[in-house]
Length: 195
Image (cartoon, rainbow, N blue to C red):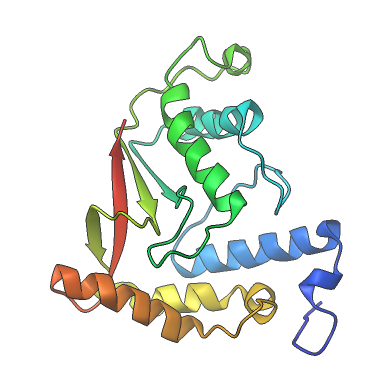
């Protein structure tokens, strides 16, 4: 099903109808940048709650995959220009930070031990994308085109935003601001939190 402006938008769909569509957009977007595995934790879009169930589910994935570094979205109340950040973004980002430590503690979520998942306490840092307080940056000049193509895979989502968004213009503009600070054409900023 392809939905365009002027037709019934994603807002007219039920969450049960929108979820598989959005998941496929996420998978397609990830493939563009070389990501083969995308997992969904089945916390309903728009009403994610911070708490033990979310921290446990993220801890489970950390114990399974054993990463050294995690990348998450902005957990702060606002974006860098003062706009309010979505509750889902805030709660998910905060849960990733806490789960990075929880995953290494065998006393937290003992049910994960029962699933055969030993603690993993070797996450050294969490990189927070979109933070209003970036401490580090990554030069993405050679990869900006793939990033734009990846974002364009979110067709239904983009077409149903409350304002018109051009993925090319938006990504280039945002990445050029950080790039200027770093002395390159395009860069992405991250707030780095050591665990």
